[in-house]
Image (cartoon, rainbow, N blue to C red; front, top):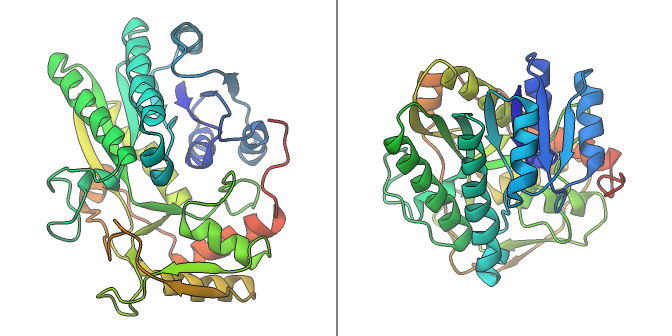
Length: 338
């Protein structure tokens, strides 16, 4: 049994599909603050298996411990967290409360229930400004925004916990830029309000929900002047979590591993690929660079290959095609009851 916090969210729901398909039993624990119950119903439809879904908040100690104990889980996958960089700068206490305090409460519940295997969702934002590229796991850690800092604080908390008790098995997975959707079109990214990330914004322009895409800067030292990022298909990312768990269940330790494609694509690469996948134009307007944006970054993903036997299998065209299938089948996102 795997206990999945935030299992109704974008990445968590795809991870639940892969866990169920791999034969694991799953309990989802989610407060549905930025996700829909309908996603959990669709996960079960895709996998052809049922899972337990509990509505609760990771900061609610009693509810969390009760659900974790009842699940009889052997491990936790921790996806529950706020993730908008801009919002984190405007409301830092909200992010420390949810991401840091929530994780502390989760770890306390795991100790109380004697569950010592954890796969944690971290982020490439913990690397800060690149001193060298690609980012390797031994790059200096230095977050440049509140969201990234909350991830870094939790990483340090996990390393301290393992030093105090080496019987823990902890995998810290540093994501790069998850995009795409399940090939069924049943689950995908459903941002509330204005999307914070490029792919869902492009998709909403293509489907007619938004008039045009803002391209922030076309004078970076990149092949076409627009920002370059390491995009990873969300299904590849979800499979990475299953492989991380398979690795951790026979080993004690605390490891940090990049999950990325190992190469980058520019904003204009994304626009052109999405136009080809959707058969729709994606109008855009070029504006000035945004303060704090990096020109380019991508992962060194060799450690994940070495330890987990994991590599990405889905390229940019597949990412765009699967996103378009999700967006066109669900033009207004999930319609399930909150």
